[in-house]
Image 1 (cartoon, rainbow, N blue to C red):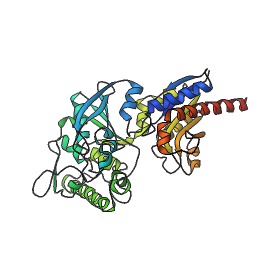
Image 2: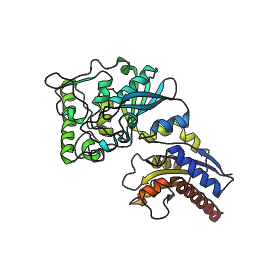
Image 3: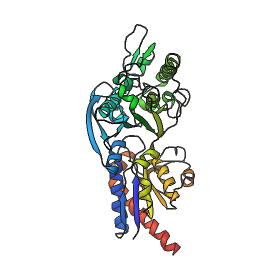
Image 4: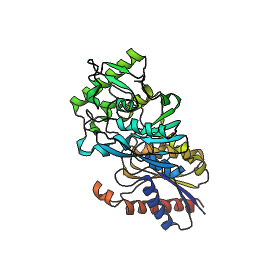
Length: 380
């Protein structure tokens, strides 16, 4: 009996990681009813991280009413993995999906992220994971810090307003009233990027456009983040702007390092450890993974690539199913993937692909299993 492990990221906008795994499993069973399938929902720190981890390891989900990216009240989900370990994600309180057509990184705030951290502290968490993908913000994490007792003032001693626009008025910082529980709490930011806070590869220049920033805004946002970095260095001798990942989630990675005394880790590596993926893979014969879009130019931090690396440590074949396959697919194969399949087997619009994600992924799962069995026949 063939033991198949399916560990896929979500197909953003169309299916959660749980749904993707279930659809692929259905197709694989149709191709070979004798197989034993194990599904493990996976995320890399972006949207869906909380749900994926809790689905894989258990724990308790909670909902907190927090300030959304544009100051509105939103219901943000977070979770306790065990009695001491919490997991939250930026996208739940400050995500692109919450700002929708009103995207404006000059105004959006991470204040709600700080409120979720506070909710976790209130539940007794002594270790908190923070997924950093999918944010609509570019405030350097000051909103998050404000919710936890940090103060950021202009020259008239007024508290800065929400958003990247407020950073331009920054004059001095007071972190003395930050929640004291943070000193005894391990904070780990989960990211799939290594961008610094500012400059050509910084938060504003690279990620600003997808958050609604035009060229003028990008320049202002980068200047604001630079002022934040310089002020922290001058007043509090905190220098984290060049740390890889500081630019994640509009500088929220920087905020975790600077304001919370936390650390940043590659999201997929930490998630794989949390869900004990190594032990599950070791009992498998085939690994099927997935991603909404894959190409050779953006491999760093991608969940399927981390999964492929782990599978190769056990000498296992890896099939990757993607909604869209980009350029330089050779680099994907070189990373440890044995076969890349597109779930969109014929030309179609994005909207049509999203509407038909279930049958498309079921078909892809069927094809993946047929390909694996054909290879075994040829080898025999």
